[in-house]
Every structure is written in C-alpha cells, then in structure tokens.
Length: 404
Image (cartoon, helix red, strand yellow):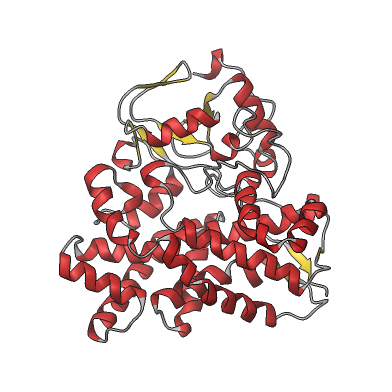
C-alpha cells in the first residue's frame, strides 16, 4: 500500500518519532495529510489524519466510529483493555443513542460549574503533596506530584476512602504502562478494578453519604438509565480516564515553562493567565496525541479513500501545529488568543472530565512554581525520555530539584 506513497524522514511509531514527533507531523501535513502508517503490532497500519480541519471533520463524522466492533484486527494494546471491560457499554466505546444515554448520567457530575466547586479540594491536595518535599531534595515530578494528584482529587470528589488511594493509583498507573510485562497484566488489573468498583457501589448503597458517587448511584437507581454493569464500568472509568491525561498535562506543562522562562515569568507575574496557559500547554505539548476511530464504511478524507473497518488516528498533536489554524504554531505563548485547541477532543466524544483536568493543571502548575520558584531539571533536557505511547505524550520521568 505504501509503495506509491512518500515515506516521511522519521517514520511514525518508531523510537525517534516518539521522542520528537513534530517534524514528522509537519512532513505529513505538507506531503501526506492522510497517511497509512505501519505499526509494530496489531493491524498492518493505522491511518494518520494530521491537518486541523480534517481532524475536526473526522471527530464529528459518524462514519468514524468509537465502537471497536468496527475495528477488524484491532491493536493488541487496545484489545487488552477492551476485553477486560467487556460485558457492558461505555461512553468510550459507543456511539449514537447508547453513547448519549450513558453520557447524560455522567455529564450531570462533570460540569464546569461543579468542577469549580472542587478547586478547594484540588488546592488542598496540591499543598499536601508540596509539603511532603523539601527544597533541594531531588524528586521525580511524575511519581511525586503529577501522578498522585489526579487520584487524590477523584477519590475525594467521589468519596473514596483515603486508604484506598494507593491501590487505585497502582492499578491505573499499571494500565497506562508501556512496559511489556505490565501490558500483559492489564486484563488482571482491570478486572480487579471492576471488582473493587462493584464492592464500592454496594457499600455506598448500604451506607449512602453526601458525596458525588452516592448521588450518581441514586440517580441511576431511581431513573434506571444504566444497567448495573454499565454503572460499574462508568465509575471504574472515572478512576482511569483522567489519570494519565492530567498527570502528563501537569508534567508537560512544567517542562514547557522551564523551556520558555519568559513565559514562566509571565505566568508568575500574572497568575490570572493560568487558564490561558493550560490551553496553550494542551495545544503546544501534544499531551493528548490522538484518539481512536474506526471506519464503518469507505470514507474519503483530503482526497484519500480510507476503506471500511480501518483504524484511524485523528492526530490532535499534528492539528495543533497546523499554521492554517494557529499563527506561529511552533511558538509557545500563554497569551495566545484565540486558541481553538482540541486537546480534550471535539464533538460528542469530547472528554467529559475536561473541566476537572484543566482546573487541576491550573492549580498544580502555578502552585509548584510559587512554592519552588527556582525549581530546575536535574538532567539535560535531551535526557527526558518519552514513552512509546500512541495516545498520550508521556515523559517516563522528570527529575527535578525543587528550590526556593
């Protein structure tokens, strides 16, 4: 298939690509905006769509489904998670009426207004994490700050016991791993998380409280919109969905600001820019790299016909560097306006927890630099290694020295 198609200088899904995908994104936008990229596992290729308007079109076109029943030979790393979550519909794997029915239940909880009420919860968790580190102590920002925060926040919001946070963190962290040994155990971890979620729902029913999870359970029981297993999968998804994205958004935001000290100084001087800064972090850093879609029929995009049953990657990170959508797209400017990024997706499948993830980052990143204004990397920038992850751009570790 690729014999008649130009080959990018750095091929997608290779080690060099994962460390710096942006030159490949540019080449693809300019030369092959709909490109069948070979992958090392799963199907023989995935279709990468890289121009901003094309990416948005794919995300709203019902012929590009989120339901993996259309996938054909699905990617192994995806089917491991899918098989473990099988037996119930979920927001991430349905379209149309089923998707609307399930999403409508969760949407009541994760609104911009409700997220704003959680600012105090987020600030308290941030201060707790910052208090645990002394100035001059070498830490891995990922494991000591970025990863713990989303679990602490979602557990507090839902009303999950503090004692359970450690185990929940281990499960969801293992599910996002790119290590082969961990990937092999993903079905086990997901099944354990489902069992934990079932037990937690039963406990909340037996002893209701005033927390969000009880409210969701009560609404489901009274209205009958979800089956029991759909409720279990939805609640388990709350733990998983925001973990990796939020953690890497925080870490990539810190790196981007350290890379651009003028923008860091601007943020410190003008804390009211925090929301705009997170928008620019979402656009610039490629944290949310792509999403999965599958063609339900043959579809033409930018003059290229994608057959039915194909795996399609609308590449958000490439769209965010498209100069037709963003002037000077390779510049990092926290005052960028307008900033029509699609870092949380676009259309009916836009991330339900976007407001919460953005607020966590708005609070966590400036707070880190307020507490440790002289924070610096404890390695060369070129030594930051990015995991070979297809959906999230994730630094394996970010060693820093927090300094006052």
